[in-house]
Length: 338
Ligand code: PEP
Ligand code: MN
Image (cartoon, rainbow, N blue to C red; front, side, top):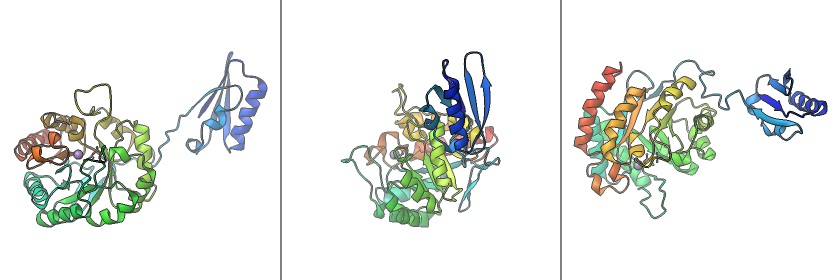
């Protein structure tokens, strides 16, 4: 951490800053320039002190952090890539893992047909929301426990693993009984009590990026999960809000290599929520794999026009089948497999 003093800062101001640094158990390194004094705060643990404790002192211009606020998610903490093992599926290894299914679980026929097509085309994980975090309270909120039971049936029939969303800490034990991976949605990325409850469940957790979250905020949220001694955290980029309104959200594929650089956690891309329209999903899926994503989370539906949520962005089975053939070729071209 660097404390930059104002031009006119007095000796007394500087002494006070130094005193506060030392009171907090840190060392200092002074850099007295012609016009300004810079005080570097040295020692381990500077990331856990608030910059305000120095900012409020007289004569301080600004305080700049050097250490990243996230720790456990950082590459500095763990050099090797984390591979999350769920059943016989490895997320973060050489294989690109396809997770597919409807936005919401709606009926037995619907979820089982999605599971069967997914299974036959090489998807490893079945998605489907039972507890839905909808923007409007009047929109379909999901079948809740009934939806979880239908997911369990689909798993029984096909052997696919299940990922489904949790929206409240009190639902975690119930959802964890049925789901192999807990999904935390974009709207809940900074719901810290939910993160703690999900972390404590011991289940792998897929943490979607908040649609206005920076990389730092996202990885610091991941630390909440990791801090519960739960190493099985998967990140998911699903589009962020920008000035561009040509798609529902802007898929930030640039963050995939950045995530790979700064964290050891695997990253999945959800092209469906970013695109908002089925027509754009294939291009974004292919681009995600080319960018180095460890998997794709994609919405499909037997009859998208009749879907109770996110129909416009859901692929039909025939479009999904065409896409899977392309993704297999693409994965091979970049030295991976599906
Ligand atoms: C979903 O996966 O259906 C969902 C609600 O996603 P997001 O949290 O990215 O909006
Ligand atoms: Mn959806």
